[in-house]
Structures are given as structure tokens and as C-alpha cells.
Image 1 (tube, rainbow, N blue to C red):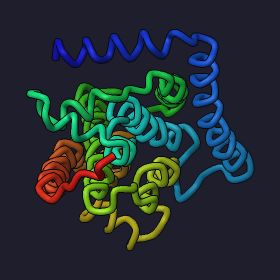
Image 2 (tube, helix red, strand yellow):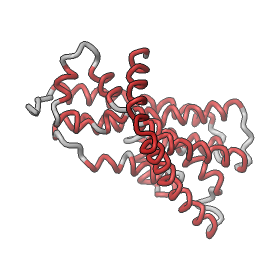
Image 3 (cartoon, rainbow, N blue to C red):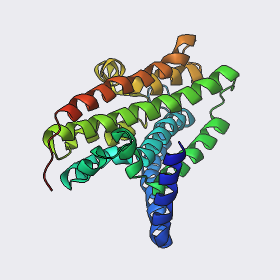
Length: 258
């Protein structure tokens, strides 16, 4: 952890060399998410509810998935940019160093400018908590924390899968954006509104619904099933097969010779 913090300190100092660029990037990230928020606002201005969910409830749902995605994109960015690491030969240098290659890739790139999206998510959290009318008990607060942790784990796992595919293709496969950036967009609303088929896929294949939809129902009182509270903890296990896939890809790695 001490070494990771050292990496983070160095990266932050390098990014702050151009303070104006850093601030504009953070503001840009905030505004990109703000346009999505406006889209939700204008829809609810015309339609008072969507599939039985109110505006503050949807904002709470969106805030969870946006926070989890922003955190993962900020601190797991090395895997998202892994195709560049392979193609320029940097991964060869990583392999000859004494530290674990996963740690080195993880610490190779941290995008602190993504804090703009996190600020947007925090603002939505504050609004949703105040206006949703939810009675915040200890169990519901724990559920919300579990949702954030589960979301970070699932998105991090998806970034690792994206990086692992680069062992076979060298270049990243853009279809993975459907499950990362696409999930962030689809996650603006509870996944049930997209149909039963999509909900099952996001439950049993890519466990996005385990940290977004089911515990959300428990928090807003649409379900009394207390087991929904622990489903985000189950979604954290998704990172295990992702790391196994990374190991399989690593065993087949061949240098690009760059």
C-alpha cells in the first residue's frame, strides 16, 4: 500500500504540473455526466415516474453506478489503457521487475481528473437522500456501502477482462465498452425497465444487477427481502474469474517486439 501511495503521489504531481489542463479535464468530466442528468430530469419533467420509480429514486440508482464507475475508471485506468502498454513494449519491462505485474499495471495510470464525475455522483447522492423519503436505517446504510463496493469490484473486473483480451489481440476490443461505458449509461435507470432478458443477463452473466437493482429495491422499500442487502457482496466474487482469465492471457503472452 505504501508503494501504491508513492505511485499515486508521483502521478498526481505530474498531472498537477498543468493545473489549468487538470481543472478543465475535471470540469469536462463533470459536464459530461451533467448532460446525462439533464436527460433524466427532462424525462421526469414530462413523465412523473418510470416503471413506478420516482425521480429521486432514479437519481439514487444512477449515483451508485456513476460513483462505482468513476472510482474504477480513476484507479483501475491502467487496465483500461493496457493495449497501449502492450503495443509499445512497456509490458516487457513490467515482467522483468520484481513486483507483481497486476500491481504495476494498476499503479501505472491513475486519472485524478475523473474526480469531476465523482463530484456529480456526490451531488446526486445528497439530493436523492434528502428528497427520496427513504428512512435510513443501519441496514440500509450498510446496503448502500455494499452497493458501492460491489460496483467498484464489478467494473474493475470488467476492465481486467478488457486488458486480458489484449493478450490475444494486442489491441483492445471496443465491444467491451458496451459493458463498461454502456453499463454506466444503462445504469441511469433500474435495470428492470429494459426487460426480463436483460435483467437476467445482468444478474447471472455480468452481475451488474446484483449491486444496482436488487439492493436498490430493498433500500427504497419495494422489497422486504433482507437477502438483497448482501447481493452486492456476492457480486464482488466476480473479480475472481476475471483474475483467472488474466492469468490465462498472461500465460499466452508474446512480446510485440516494440
